[in-house]
Image (cartoon, rainbow, N blue to C red; front, side, top):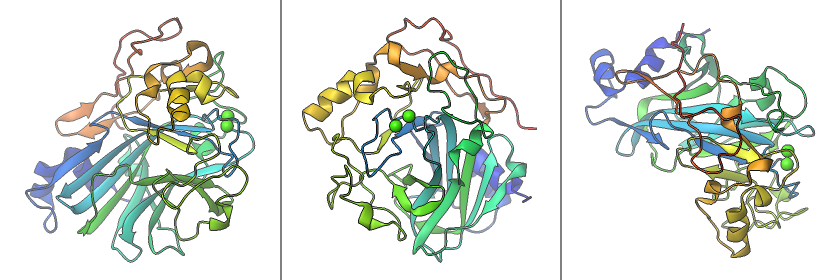
Length: 336
Ligand SMILES: [Ca+2]
Ligand SMILES: [Ca+2]
């Protein structure tokens, strides 16, 4: 166990108290930049068969993510990545989740993973070896987040639904490092639990040092020097929605995401590299909504002035599914 309370508290309550408590690198100009916004979550959807295209249901791992970067301009003193697993529609591949940062391996840093709302139970994590830059594991197997439940998780409209507790990977730099704080959530990627050289990143990233580059351009992969992990479907293997969604949605098992979200199919057809807002139109009968999943027992985002509520409102469109809750806020348990 690590005494992580001071760091976590600083991350949570921001500049004012940290100025009062910590001598050293914290400057009066530090701010916290959130992605997509404070207390809000973007969505990562993952197809796990790369370099093959797979069945394109993009529910093999579904995560909600929030990034908080404490920085003074380009000088970053802390990065906090909060991950809230939603679904795991895979029974053939075990996937881990990691964060890759553009800072050299030798950078002085302290990394901790702790359950949201319970920073006192943080576990120190070491940077990956055999890398020239910093790479940290969030989950070595995302399935662990669901308590080891077998089979497909949260990808069937009829349920049962399982809840994962969100966790935060917090990386503190005793001496601030020069990192562009804006391209959040940085290089969040998935890898095969039993083979760290088999990685899948967002298209702008080509993999860490130990990535097996011989996988590119095999099976259905059509990656280029500029865009990676793209398959013959026209889609990257990770879709990232960097937007505060009232309610995330993903295809049920085996249904193509292009059938579930017709605007995405249109965008692929027209050759758009980076289509946006496709998630606003869905085929209701073949998507699962995050609001169908029972709320976690503890989802507290400590911020300046107290608890932030995670909004889990009903989506504005396609409201035919009566199992959705109405317009509500989820109350977040206070940490023990
Ligand atoms: Ca799949
Ligand atoms: Ca699946």
